[in-house]
Length: 283
Image (cartoon, rainbow, N blue to C red; front, side, top):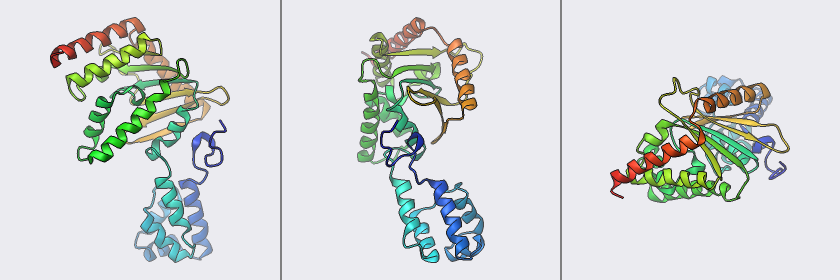
């Protein structure tokens, strides 16, 4: 896992992160003989907000970081760090670490409660997902996001690696994301990958007593490093590497698989629902 080691630390993190930003801010502030309240007054924010920055809880915008540089006489240090941390990752900040690991994992297992996982999405489906979350997104930005998502799908270009398995809640295949035609294309894309034995997919049916997991979960295993879990919520996510925590995530995922439909039954359901969409779309 030495890839990009010069820039990234463990799990693809930038070596200088928000926690370092906060600790350095505290060190420089104390060296200047200022309290959090005093620095806050000078840069037009509260002392408690400065405390949150120092604890790595909040992330400043570059204009505030520039004011801090002026007051602490740090020659643009904090503004440069801020701009690097905000703009240095090609993906959303909360996804950057997981995205890096996707390219290194030998086995990837996902649980999807709401949407088709990004790696499996068609362009039409991705477009609908983005417009659902960002309805006023300019067309150029929208196309850039779709292209980035399609690039992610190239991880399945290799015929055997990584081993990829997903559990989809039935809501994922029943929700008409983008309309009937888009859903038909999307489900048949998944069916094609399963029939080529490139991926495995199980559907967690509505008849299951409960959804088991309350958010999306990705488990990644590696040849030369311990496994990790990535838990994702609404525009946020957490990369988990504590062995006990990862083990509990694996147990939850295995439970979801145990109550999901078998592979063959899941494939039949996917094909059946795709035919329903095709009929609705007049295909």
